[in-house]
Structures are given as C-alpha cells and as structure tokens.
Image 1 (cartoon, rainbow, N blue to C red):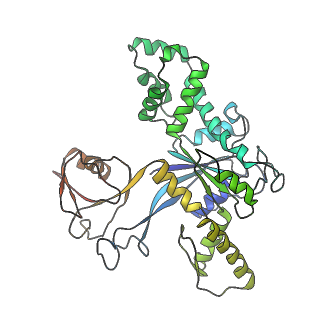
Image 2 (cartoon, rainbow, N blue to C red):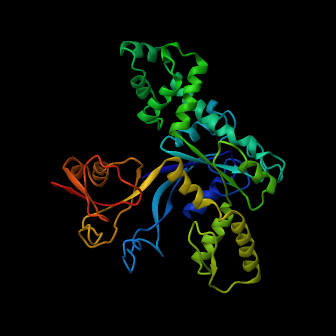
Image 3 (cartoon, helix red, strand yellow):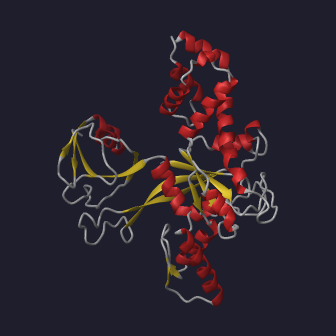
Length: 391
C-alpha cells in the first residue's frame, strides 16, 4: 500500500490531521511530543468512480454517489525540531519512521501560535513561513549522514567498479526509502565526478535525493484560528505547494456525519444538515461552513489527493475479467482500483494483479474500446483493463 508521511514540528496539528483523515483515536494535546511513536492508519484518496460513465445504472457497489475512495497508509511521526538529524528531540526516531513514505505532508501551524520547537507562544507571535524550509533541511541532512558513512570506502568501490557511481550509491542508500531511479536522477543533475566531491557536493546530492524521494506538500493547518495575513503569506510563496487546512473542522464534520446530523463526504466543499441540531451545534457548523466556502473545503482530503496525484503522479487503473460487464469472475463490478505510477504499461498492471499473470501475459483489452493492447502500451488514468494470460 502506498505510504504518505505526516511531518512537522511538535504541536503543529499533525495528530489532529491524522485523526481527521483516518478517524483513528490518537493523543492530541497542546504541548510538544504528544506523539512519541509513529501512528499508522488507513486514509483514502478520493476519485470519481467510472461506473456512471460506463452506464452502470445502479452503481458498482464499491462507490458512494459516484465517489470512490482508495486506501493508502498515513504515517503520523513524532514532531521534528531544528537539528533533529543530530539527534535533538526525537529526531532519529522521527527520520527512521519516514523511510517508507513516498511523499510527505508537512503540517505547519499557520496560526503562528507555536515557536520553532513547538512551544505555545500565543496566536500570531511566530512567523509560520520560517518553518517551511527546516523540514526539507532536516531530511536532507539525515540522508547526508547516511551518504557520508564510510565515504572513503564507497569511493574505493566506485573506482573499482570502473566509474559506476549509481551502483555504490544504491547499495549505500538501501533501506533509506530512496529508489534507484531517485539516485540516478540526482546524479544526472550533479554532473560532477563523485570521486572529486567535497562536503558541499555531498550535501547538494542529499538535497536532490530528498526532493526526488520525499516530495512535500505544505498543509497550512489551523486555518480556522490563523490570522488571515499568515495564510496569505504562505499561499504567496513561490515553488511551494500550499493547502490551507483545518484538521479540527474535518474531525467535527466526520463526527457529525457519523452521528447522522449532516450529509458529508471527505473532500466535499459543503455539507447538508439532515438531523436536529441545538443552537451550539448549529453555530459551530455554520462557522465551519463559512470557512469551507472561503477555502473550498477543510483541506484535509485535498492535501492527500494532491500528494498522491500531483506530487507522486499516480493514476488509477481498474482491472476486470469480463470486459463487457466490467466484472471479476464472481460478478463484482469494478472490483479493484489500483494506484500506479503514470507511465505504467499493460504488463505492469498484469504484474500488479499477480506475478504469475505478469509472467504469462499475452495481451490486454481496453474495456471501453474493446481494443487489444500490447505489453508496452502505456495506460491512462481511469482505464478499465482486462488482462489475458496463459494462467
């Protein structure tokens, strides 16, 4: 399952975001290091289900009102403080917990109510823009530390291999959540022989590895209490993807929907009241509605979707066994929805369904057009595909 990390300084609202996205009960408190061990939960990306477009009148049974949710893993890790890569705070544990994360949602305290280490200082007394770059720096320096272990031995191996830097780097970074492709891409950008690298070159390379292996989206959290100028400053930053967020508002909506008071799905820009509310409930929900109207929602689902589909460039594919009825062998309509990298081929999908099917792949069929597809055919987002194999 695809994993996305939640990271940020202590008391930025990571655990609130995590609960809002997963409804898993976690400790939420107004002091640093509430989260000690990483919390793992299941969240979802939201997509339009293709069942209506395919003419399936009663829906596929896997969606709700034409909306389908595909599970991903969300990891809420311990808060990070400056110099965490040197072991300050819970830094080493934090960074280790991020190994499996393919992308990172950096949860910022947009209210400016906590200092660089997460200590409460009162709303508006800290500039959240100053918190933006430190997480990138800490992860880069963590990777830099891994790279520098046994650096002289690495360079001897590099020379012994006849100048193949990617192989020694791949061996060194194994287990750090850095893929071979990330290393090769970073090496292509450095354009300098690793044997001549100085300390600053290694740091630059670590920064490129971070950008390639742990791309980030910024969740400007606590927008419900943040001074408007703080949110505006964050949104105005160049080269940063910033989403205003209120984890607290999302939790309130999900709990109200669970209690039957409103009709709401994560990611909706509004909600519908359907139960009897008292004055306090009405006032609270109307305040949330005004916030959603201003920002287009609570931002929680938007962060998750954009991390997966924009930062990581994933697409959704629907394998079926009957290309005419869009079902599996048991008659379940659109039974599976797989998240796969853009550029995935028909054979890649076959391997994702099962390794035996991938190895015995013959061809695929586009269920919409009924056209036969070869093994190297690049699939598109939303494709419904039948795999034909000898198995």
